[in-house]
Length: 287
Image (cartoon, rainbow, N blue to C red; front, side):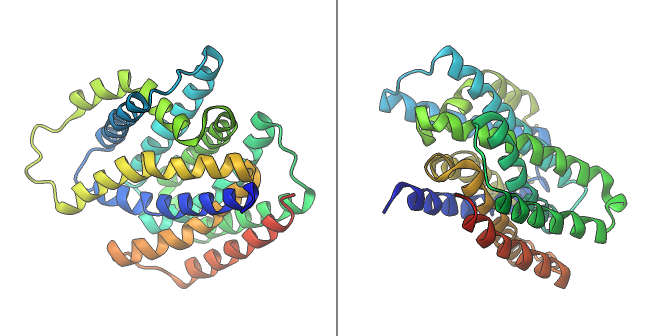
């Protein structure tokens, strides 16, 4: 299997794992404060990453790489989890999932700005088409009805796209799992104390769904998913493999409907089908 194909498979596995993030976050914020959820998931994953780096005796990143790792941490360790957790106080997981369709475009733009990639015109057309379907969906549902939630989701998408592109470029030198592990570790001096400060006085009333949600976003969304995702972006190209995120709403909507019993409208399914078709077009022109 060549490197590009391997990158696409790794990226697909990462997307499948990430698809459970928003439904899990939605379940967790029902019992946990969004701030606590953000810092707790980063702390749990950071402690595991620290152990992994220690036992593997990994080489420490250079000073220049630390700057890039700080960008990754700000985007995917702090920014995206915090903004999405706050957004899910105002909108449903099913509604928020469709915004993930904007992530490929954001990632591709930052891949050009930070990674020096130059996708073809055909690639951009399919990428913009998929993103336009997402924006159209949001407008059809009335953005003004949940302006706060939609604005927070858009902010999450932008900062996450930057974190994805920066991490993918850095993965070529450090390795995929090393990038997210170091990003989590350098966040620990801030995240760990905040976890203790924001920790609820009592957790006796936390439901099983709340604990499952916290466990999922800490282990899979914050660490395991990135191992495959960053490796996929590094091998297959950030802008190209990033288009696989267009499939994430499809998986996420199924999870939201199955486990959270949220209503999935016909328009949601139609939009998701449209953006899935955009993946094939973007991949065709990705070279």
